[in-house]
Image 1 (tube, rainbow, N blue to C red):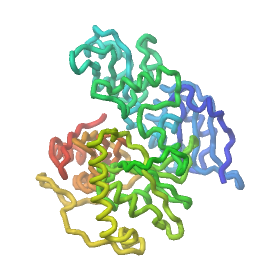
Image 2: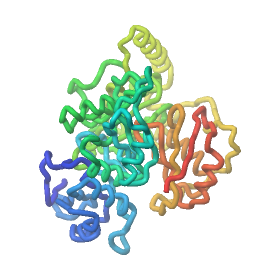
Image 3: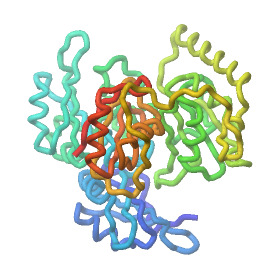
Image 4: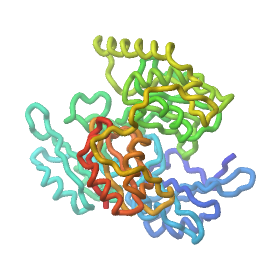
Length: 454
Protein backbone atom coordinates (compact mmCIF):
# COMPACT_ATOMS: atom_id res chain seq x y z
CA UNK A 1 0.00 0.00 0.00
CA UNK A 2 1.22 3.48 -0.78
CA UNK A 3 0.60 6.79 0.86
CA UNK A 4 2.01 10.21 0.28
CA UNK A 5 2.52 13.36 2.23
CA UNK A 6 1.28 15.45 -0.70
CA UNK A 7 -1.10 14.71 -3.53
CA UNK A 8 -0.87 17.30 -6.28
CA UNK A 9 -3.93 18.12 -8.32
CA UNK A 10 -3.95 16.59 -11.77
CA UNK A 11 -4.13 20.01 -13.41
CA UNK A 12 -0.96 21.24 -11.70
CA UNK A 13 1.21 18.17 -12.30
CA UNK A 14 2.67 19.42 -15.57
CA UNK A 15 2.30 23.18 -15.35
CA UNK A 16 4.62 24.12 -16.89
CA UNK A 17 5.45 20.95 -18.85
CA UNK A 18 8.57 19.01 -17.81
CA UNK A 19 8.88 20.73 -14.45
CA UNK A 20 8.38 17.66 -12.23
CA UNK A 21 11.17 15.19 -11.41
CA UNK A 22 10.89 11.54 -10.41
CA UNK A 23 13.56 10.42 -7.93
CA UNK A 24 14.67 6.93 -6.96
CA UNK A 25 16.45 7.34 -3.63
CA UNK A 26 17.51 5.44 -0.53
CA UNK A 27 14.66 4.93 1.93
CA UNK A 28 16.62 6.80 4.60
CA UNK A 29 16.66 10.06 2.61
CA UNK A 30 14.32 12.68 4.09
CA UNK A 31 12.37 15.48 2.45
CA UNK A 32 14.65 18.06 4.08
CA UNK A 33 17.71 16.44 2.50
CA UNK A 34 16.06 16.48 -0.94
CA UNK A 35 15.04 20.11 -0.53
CA UNK A 36 18.55 21.11 0.59
CA UNK A 37 20.21 19.59 -2.47
CA UNK A 38 17.62 20.47 -5.12
CA UNK A 39 16.61 24.00 -4.07
CA UNK A 40 19.92 25.36 -5.38
CA UNK A 41 18.58 24.82 -8.91
CA UNK A 42 15.43 26.89 -8.56
CA UNK A 43 12.11 27.40 -6.83
CA UNK A 44 10.65 24.14 -5.51
CA UNK A 45 6.87 24.24 -5.43
CA UNK A 46 6.31 20.80 -3.87
CA UNK A 47 8.10 17.65 -2.76
CA UNK A 48 6.05 14.47 -2.65
CA UNK A 49 7.43 11.52 -0.68
CA UNK A 50 5.82 8.14 -1.40
CA UNK A 51 5.36 6.21 1.85
CA UNK A 52 4.03 2.87 2.98
CA UNK A 53 0.45 3.32 4.17
CA UNK A 54 0.90 1.07 7.19
CA UNK A 55 4.41 1.83 8.42
CA UNK A 56 4.66 5.40 7.08
CA UNK A 57 8.19 4.56 5.97
CA UNK A 58 9.60 5.90 2.72
CA UNK A 59 9.39 3.57 -0.28
CA UNK A 60 12.48 5.14 -1.83
CA UNK A 61 10.51 7.13 -4.41
CA UNK A 62 9.74 10.84 -4.48
CA UNK A 63 8.71 13.67 -6.80
CA UNK A 64 10.08 17.22 -6.90
CA UNK A 65 8.02 19.93 -8.60
CA UNK A 66 9.88 23.03 -9.81
CA UNK A 67 8.43 26.34 -10.91
CA UNK A 68 10.21 26.16 -14.29
CA UNK A 69 11.12 23.43 -16.73
CA UNK A 70 14.68 24.76 -17.08
CA UNK A 71 15.17 24.45 -13.32
CA UNK A 72 13.94 20.85 -13.32
CA UNK A 73 16.12 19.93 -16.31
CA UNK A 74 19.23 21.47 -14.74
CA UNK A 75 18.57 19.61 -11.50
CA UNK A 76 18.13 16.36 -13.42
CA UNK A 77 21.40 16.86 -15.29
CA UNK A 78 23.39 17.79 -12.20
CA UNK A 79 21.92 15.42 -9.61
CA UNK A 80 21.49 12.15 -11.54
CA UNK A 81 23.96 9.65 -10.13
CA UNK A 82 24.92 11.81 -7.12
CA UNK A 83 24.93 10.67 -3.48
CA UNK A 84 22.82 12.86 -1.19
CA UNK A 85 24.09 11.33 2.05
CA UNK A 86 27.39 9.59 2.63
CA UNK A 87 27.00 5.83 2.64
CA UNK A 88 23.85 5.79 0.47
CA UNK A 89 23.56 4.70 -3.14
CA UNK A 90 23.62 7.25 -5.97
CA UNK A 91 20.16 8.56 -6.74
CA UNK A 92 18.41 8.30 -10.09
CA UNK A 93 16.66 11.39 -11.43
CA UNK A 94 14.17 11.34 -14.30
CA UNK A 95 11.68 13.72 -15.83
CA UNK A 96 8.38 12.47 -14.42
CA UNK A 97 5.80 10.95 -16.73
CA UNK A 98 3.17 13.36 -17.97
CA UNK A 99 -0.10 12.95 -19.84
CA UNK A 100 1.76 13.43 -23.11
CA UNK A 101 4.73 11.13 -22.45
CA UNK A 102 4.64 7.37 -22.20
CA UNK A 103 7.21 7.00 -19.42
CA UNK A 104 9.68 8.77 -17.20
CA UNK A 105 12.40 10.33 -19.34
CA UNK A 106 16.07 10.70 -18.50
CA UNK A 107 18.77 13.23 -19.28
CA UNK A 108 19.65 11.38 -22.49
CA UNK A 109 16.16 11.46 -23.98
CA UNK A 110 16.52 13.35 -27.25
CA UNK A 111 12.89 14.52 -27.12
CA UNK A 112 13.88 16.87 -24.29
CA UNK A 113 16.63 18.52 -26.35
CA UNK A 114 14.83 19.48 -29.59
CA UNK A 115 12.63 22.52 -29.97
CA UNK A 116 10.25 23.35 -32.79
CA UNK A 117 9.89 26.99 -33.86
CA UNK A 118 7.98 29.22 -36.26
CA UNK A 119 10.42 31.45 -38.16
CA UNK A 120 10.41 33.96 -41.01
CA UNK A 121 10.58 32.20 -44.38
CA UNK A 122 13.69 34.23 -45.15
CA UNK A 123 15.61 32.56 -42.31
CA UNK A 124 18.57 30.37 -43.20
CA UNK A 125 19.97 27.65 -40.96
CA UNK A 126 22.77 30.06 -39.99
CA UNK A 127 20.17 32.67 -39.00
CA UNK A 128 18.36 30.09 -36.91
CA UNK A 129 21.55 29.00 -35.17
CA UNK A 130 22.65 32.57 -34.55
CA UNK A 131 19.29 33.41 -32.98
CA UNK A 132 19.17 30.46 -30.57
CA UNK A 133 22.85 29.87 -29.71
CA UNK A 134 22.64 32.24 -26.73
CA UNK A 135 20.67 29.62 -24.81
CA UNK A 136 23.23 26.84 -25.09
CA UNK A 137 25.39 24.69 -27.33
CA UNK A 138 23.52 23.69 -30.49
CA UNK A 139 24.06 20.31 -32.11
CA UNK A 140 22.24 21.21 -35.33
CA UNK A 141 19.49 23.36 -36.85
CA UNK A 142 17.18 22.39 -39.70
CA UNK A 143 14.76 24.45 -41.79
CA UNK A 144 11.67 22.54 -42.91
CA UNK A 145 11.21 23.00 -46.64
CA UNK A 146 8.63 22.18 -49.25
CA UNK A 147 9.75 18.94 -50.86
CA UNK A 148 8.65 20.08 -54.33
CA UNK A 149 9.77 23.72 -54.44
CA UNK A 150 12.57 23.66 -51.88
CA UNK A 151 11.18 26.80 -50.27
CA UNK A 152 11.11 27.28 -46.51
CA UNK A 153 7.80 26.57 -44.80
CA UNK A 154 8.61 29.05 -42.06
CA UNK A 155 9.22 26.18 -39.63
CA UNK A 156 12.34 24.65 -38.16
CA UNK A 157 13.83 22.88 -35.24
CA UNK A 158 16.91 23.26 -33.09
CA UNK A 159 18.67 20.42 -31.30
CA UNK A 160 20.61 21.30 -28.15
CA UNK A 161 23.10 19.14 -26.28
CA UNK A 162 21.22 19.34 -22.97
CA UNK A 163 17.53 19.39 -21.95
CA UNK A 164 18.11 22.47 -19.76
CA UNK A 165 19.34 24.42 -22.78
CA UNK A 166 16.22 23.56 -24.79
CA UNK A 167 13.99 24.47 -21.85
CA UNK A 168 15.79 27.79 -21.37
CA UNK A 169 15.33 28.61 -25.06
CA UNK A 170 11.60 27.89 -24.87
CA UNK A 171 11.20 30.06 -21.77
CA UNK A 172 13.29 33.02 -22.91
CA UNK A 173 13.14 33.30 -26.71
CA UNK A 174 10.88 35.82 -28.43
CA UNK A 175 7.27 34.66 -28.15
CA UNK A 176 6.78 35.13 -31.89
CA UNK A 177 8.83 31.97 -32.42
CA UNK A 178 6.16 30.01 -30.50
CA UNK A 179 8.84 27.56 -29.40
CA UNK A 180 7.80 24.16 -28.05
CA UNK A 181 9.50 20.81 -27.58
CA UNK A 182 9.56 19.02 -30.92
CA UNK A 183 7.21 16.07 -31.26
CA UNK A 184 7.97 13.03 -33.43
CA UNK A 185 6.32 12.61 -36.77
CA UNK A 186 2.66 11.61 -36.69
CA UNK A 187 1.20 8.64 -38.46
CA UNK A 188 -0.62 11.00 -40.83
CA UNK A 189 2.46 12.86 -42.01
CA UNK A 190 2.91 12.36 -45.71
CA UNK A 191 6.59 13.15 -46.09
CA UNK A 192 9.76 14.05 -44.27
CA UNK A 193 9.22 17.76 -44.63
CA UNK A 194 6.02 17.44 -42.62
CA UNK A 195 7.93 15.87 -39.76
CA UNK A 196 6.64 18.37 -37.25
CA UNK A 197 3.73 20.00 -39.06
CA UNK A 198 1.04 17.98 -37.34
CA UNK A 199 2.77 18.34 -33.99
CA UNK A 200 2.50 22.10 -34.40
CA UNK A 201 -1.20 21.95 -35.22
CA UNK A 202 -1.82 19.77 -32.17
CA UNK A 203 -0.21 22.27 -29.86
CA UNK A 204 -1.98 25.19 -31.45
CA UNK A 205 -5.34 23.64 -30.56
CA UNK A 206 -4.51 24.36 -26.96
CA UNK A 207 -4.87 20.78 -25.76
CA UNK A 208 -1.76 19.99 -23.70
CA UNK A 209 -2.77 16.37 -23.43
CA UNK A 210 -2.45 15.69 -27.13
CA UNK A 211 0.70 14.15 -28.52
CA UNK A 212 1.85 13.64 -32.07
CA UNK A 213 3.61 10.42 -31.15
CA UNK A 214 1.39 7.43 -31.99
CA UNK A 215 2.53 5.59 -28.86
CA UNK A 216 2.36 8.45 -26.40
CA UNK A 217 -1.13 7.51 -25.27
CA UNK A 218 -0.33 3.82 -25.04
CA UNK A 219 -0.48 4.01 -21.25
CA UNK A 220 -4.19 4.67 -21.57
CA UNK A 221 -4.92 1.45 -23.43
CA UNK A 222 -6.83 -1.17 -21.49
CA UNK A 223 -8.11 -4.45 -22.75
CA UNK A 224 -11.68 -4.19 -23.94
CA UNK A 225 -11.95 -0.41 -23.81
CA UNK A 226 -12.37 -0.15 -27.56
CA UNK A 227 -8.87 1.17 -28.20
CA UNK A 228 -7.44 -2.20 -29.00
CA UNK A 229 -7.65 -3.22 -32.62
CA UNK A 230 -8.61 -6.32 -34.54
CA UNK A 231 -6.16 -5.27 -37.26
CA UNK A 232 -2.88 -7.14 -37.10
CA UNK A 233 -0.08 -4.71 -36.28
CA UNK A 234 3.53 -4.74 -35.09
CA UNK A 235 2.57 -3.29 -31.72
CA UNK A 236 1.20 -5.33 -28.79
CA UNK A 237 -0.22 -4.47 -25.38
CA UNK A 238 0.46 -7.06 -22.68
CA UNK A 239 -1.68 -7.11 -19.51
CA UNK A 240 -0.87 -9.00 -16.33
CA UNK A 241 -2.78 -9.25 -13.07
CA UNK A 242 0.29 -10.46 -11.21
CA UNK A 243 3.23 -8.20 -10.52
CA UNK A 244 5.81 -8.45 -13.29
CA UNK A 245 8.87 -6.37 -14.05
CA UNK A 246 9.96 -4.91 -17.36
CA UNK A 247 12.93 -7.28 -17.33
CA UNK A 248 10.60 -10.30 -17.06
CA UNK A 249 8.36 -9.15 -19.90
CA UNK A 250 11.37 -8.19 -22.01
CA UNK A 251 12.99 -11.57 -21.44
CA UNK A 252 9.82 -13.40 -22.48
CA UNK A 253 8.98 -11.46 -25.63
CA UNK A 254 12.61 -11.11 -26.71
CA UNK A 255 12.64 -14.87 -27.30
CA UNK A 256 10.90 -13.99 -30.55
CA UNK A 257 13.37 -12.19 -32.85
CA UNK A 258 12.74 -8.64 -34.01
CA UNK A 259 11.61 -6.86 -30.86
CA UNK A 260 12.26 -3.11 -31.14
CA UNK A 261 11.48 -2.22 -27.56
CA UNK A 262 9.49 -3.09 -24.45
CA UNK A 263 8.12 -0.51 -22.04
CA UNK A 264 6.06 -0.93 -18.88
CA UNK A 265 3.15 1.49 -18.62
CA UNK A 266 2.95 3.62 -15.47
CA UNK A 267 0.35 5.89 -13.86
CA UNK A 268 0.95 9.65 -13.37
CA UNK A 269 2.73 8.89 -10.08
CA UNK A 270 5.17 6.45 -11.64
CA UNK A 271 3.66 3.17 -10.45
CA UNK A 272 3.35 0.03 -12.55
CA UNK A 273 -0.08 -0.36 -14.20
CA UNK A 274 0.38 -4.05 -14.98
CA UNK A 275 0.66 -3.38 -18.71
CA UNK A 276 3.56 -3.34 -21.12
CA UNK A 277 3.79 -2.17 -24.71
CA UNK A 278 5.84 -4.33 -27.09
CA UNK A 279 6.83 -3.34 -30.59
CA UNK A 280 8.44 -5.59 -33.19
CA UNK A 281 10.22 -4.44 -36.34
CA UNK A 282 8.20 -6.80 -38.51
CA UNK A 283 4.62 -8.00 -38.71
CA UNK A 284 5.49 -11.70 -38.64
CA UNK A 285 7.17 -11.55 -35.23
CA UNK A 286 4.23 -9.66 -33.74
CA UNK A 287 1.77 -12.25 -35.09
CA UNK A 288 3.87 -15.08 -33.72
CA UNK A 289 4.21 -13.42 -30.30
CA UNK A 290 0.50 -12.67 -30.06
CA UNK A 291 -0.62 -16.17 -30.99
CA UNK A 292 1.96 -17.93 -28.84
CA UNK A 293 1.86 -15.81 -25.71
CA UNK A 294 -1.74 -14.63 -25.42
CA UNK A 295 -3.10 -16.70 -22.52
CA UNK A 296 0.33 -17.99 -21.58
CA UNK A 297 0.78 -18.48 -17.83
CA UNK A 298 3.69 -16.36 -16.66
CA UNK A 299 4.45 -16.46 -13.81
CA UNK A 300 2.69 -19.81 -13.30
CA UNK A 301 -0.96 -19.21 -12.47
CA UNK A 302 -1.01 -15.75 -14.07
CA UNK A 303 -2.46 -15.71 -17.57
CA UNK A 304 -1.09 -12.96 -19.82
CA UNK A 305 -3.44 -11.08 -22.14
CA UNK A 306 -1.85 -9.97 -25.39
CA UNK A 307 -3.67 -7.76 -27.90
CA UNK A 308 -2.80 -5.72 -30.97
CA UNK A 309 -2.85 -1.93 -30.75
CA UNK A 310 -2.47 0.64 -33.49
CA UNK A 311 1.16 0.97 -34.61
CA UNK A 312 0.49 4.12 -36.64
CA UNK A 313 0.92 2.58 -40.08
CA UNK A 314 -1.54 3.11 -42.90
CA UNK A 315 -3.01 -0.20 -44.07
CA UNK A 316 -6.03 1.23 -45.84
CA UNK A 317 -4.80 0.42 -49.36
CA UNK A 318 -5.86 -2.91 -50.93
CA UNK A 319 -2.22 -3.82 -51.54
CA UNK A 320 -1.36 -3.15 -47.91
CA UNK A 321 -4.24 -5.31 -46.72
CA UNK A 322 -3.25 -8.15 -49.03
CA UNK A 323 0.35 -8.01 -47.83
CA UNK A 324 -0.76 -8.03 -44.23
CA UNK A 325 -3.08 -10.99 -44.80
CA UNK A 326 -0.33 -12.92 -46.60
CA UNK A 327 2.16 -12.39 -43.78
CA UNK A 328 -0.47 -13.25 -41.19
CA UNK A 329 -1.41 -16.47 -42.99
CA UNK A 330 2.21 -17.55 -43.26
CA UNK A 331 2.88 -16.82 -39.60
CA UNK A 332 -0.33 -18.58 -38.48
CA UNK A 333 0.84 -21.66 -40.31
CA UNK A 334 4.18 -21.48 -38.49
CA UNK A 335 2.39 -20.97 -35.19
CA UNK A 336 0.14 -24.00 -35.52
CA UNK A 337 2.85 -26.24 -36.95
CA UNK A 338 5.66 -24.94 -34.75
CA UNK A 339 6.47 -25.38 -31.06
CA UNK A 340 3.78 -24.75 -28.49
CA UNK A 341 3.80 -21.68 -26.25
CA UNK A 342 5.49 -23.33 -23.26
CA UNK A 343 8.30 -24.56 -25.50
CA UNK A 344 9.26 -20.95 -26.11
CA UNK A 345 10.33 -20.51 -22.50
CA UNK A 346 13.90 -20.73 -21.36
CA UNK A 347 15.17 -23.70 -19.39
CA UNK A 348 15.66 -21.45 -16.36
CA UNK A 349 11.90 -20.92 -16.23
CA UNK A 350 11.26 -24.65 -16.11
CA UNK A 351 10.74 -25.20 -19.84
CA UNK A 352 12.88 -26.40 -22.69
CA UNK A 353 13.52 -24.02 -25.55
CA UNK A 354 12.89 -25.33 -29.08
CA UNK A 355 15.83 -26.41 -31.18
CA UNK A 356 16.71 -23.87 -33.83
CA UNK A 357 19.43 -23.70 -36.45
CA UNK A 358 22.64 -22.34 -34.96
CA UNK A 359 23.21 -18.96 -36.55
CA UNK A 360 26.01 -16.69 -35.31
CA UNK A 361 24.54 -14.17 -32.86
CA UNK A 362 26.63 -11.34 -34.29
CA UNK A 363 27.35 -11.17 -38.01
CA UNK A 364 29.85 -8.52 -39.06
CA UNK A 365 33.10 -8.06 -40.96
CA UNK A 366 34.61 -6.24 -37.96
CA UNK A 367 37.27 -8.18 -36.07
CA UNK A 368 35.69 -8.02 -32.62
CA UNK A 369 37.64 -8.62 -29.41
CA UNK A 370 36.58 -11.46 -27.09
CA UNK A 371 33.52 -11.03 -24.86
CA UNK A 372 34.02 -9.12 -21.62
CA UNK A 373 31.77 -8.76 -18.59
CA UNK A 374 29.61 -5.68 -18.19
CA UNK A 375 30.75 -3.12 -15.65
CA UNK A 376 28.64 -2.92 -12.44
CA UNK A 377 25.37 -1.05 -13.06
CA UNK A 378 26.24 1.57 -10.42
CA UNK A 379 29.58 2.41 -12.06
CA UNK A 380 30.34 6.07 -12.75
CA UNK A 381 29.76 6.78 -16.45
CA UNK A 382 32.76 8.64 -17.85
CA UNK A 383 31.88 8.48 -21.55
CA UNK A 384 28.72 8.00 -23.60
CA UNK A 385 28.57 7.06 -27.25
CA UNK A 386 25.61 8.30 -29.27
CA UNK A 387 24.78 5.67 -31.92
CA UNK A 388 22.53 6.08 -34.96
CA UNK A 389 21.17 2.87 -36.51
CA UNK A 390 20.24 2.48 -40.16
CA UNK A 391 17.66 1.22 -40.99
CA UNK A 392 16.58 0.16 -37.46
CA UNK A 393 18.09 -0.46 -34.00
CA UNK A 394 19.60 -3.80 -33.09
CA UNK A 395 18.19 -5.63 -30.04
CA UNK A 396 19.68 -4.59 -26.71
CA UNK A 397 21.22 -8.02 -26.09
CA UNK A 398 23.03 -7.93 -29.44
CA UNK A 399 24.32 -4.42 -28.76
CA UNK A 400 25.57 -5.51 -25.36
CA UNK A 401 27.29 -8.47 -27.05
CA UNK A 402 29.05 -6.14 -29.48
CA UNK A 403 29.91 -3.11 -27.33
CA UNK A 404 30.88 -4.99 -24.15
CA UNK A 405 33.86 -6.52 -25.99
CA UNK A 406 35.80 -3.26 -25.64
CA UNK A 407 35.50 -3.31 -21.85
CA UNK A 408 33.77 -1.32 -19.06
CA UNK A 409 30.34 -1.16 -20.77
CA UNK A 410 27.83 -0.08 -18.11
CA UNK A 411 24.55 0.04 -20.02
CA UNK A 412 22.92 0.08 -23.44
CA UNK A 413 20.01 2.49 -23.75
CA UNK A 414 17.72 2.64 -26.81
CA UNK A 415 15.49 5.69 -27.22
CA UNK A 416 11.93 4.30 -27.63
CA UNK A 417 10.58 4.70 -31.14
CA UNK A 418 13.86 6.10 -32.48
CA UNK A 419 16.75 4.70 -34.51
CA UNK A 420 19.23 5.98 -31.93
CA UNK A 421 20.71 4.88 -28.61
CA UNK A 422 23.49 5.42 -26.10
CA UNK A 423 26.35 3.17 -24.98
CA UNK A 424 27.55 4.10 -21.49
CA UNK A 425 31.14 3.31 -20.53
CA UNK A 426 32.97 3.51 -17.22
CA UNK A 427 36.27 4.27 -19.02
CA UNK A 428 36.82 6.75 -21.87
CA UNK A 429 39.47 4.60 -23.55
CA UNK A 430 37.06 1.70 -23.97
CA UNK A 431 34.44 4.00 -25.48
CA UNK A 432 37.00 5.45 -27.87
CA UNK A 433 38.11 1.95 -28.90
CA UNK A 434 34.51 0.96 -29.60
CA UNK A 435 33.87 4.08 -31.68
CA UNK A 436 37.06 3.59 -33.68
CA UNK A 437 36.22 -0.03 -34.45
CA UNK A 438 32.49 0.26 -35.16
CA UNK A 439 31.80 3.69 -36.64
CA UNK A 440 30.35 3.25 -40.12
CA UNK A 441 30.41 -0.55 -39.84
CA UNK A 442 27.56 -2.98 -40.45
CA UNK A 443 26.42 -5.43 -37.76
CA UNK A 444 23.62 -7.91 -38.54
CA UNK A 445 22.67 -5.82 -41.56
CA UNK A 446 22.47 -2.56 -39.58
CA UNK A 447 24.89 0.31 -40.17
CA UNK A 448 26.22 2.04 -37.05
CA UNK A 449 27.28 5.67 -36.75
CA UNK A 450 28.97 6.55 -33.43
CA UNK A 451 29.88 9.85 -31.82
CA UNK A 452 30.93 10.94 -28.34
CA UNK A 453 28.71 12.99 -26.03
CA UNK A 454 30.40 15.40 -23.67
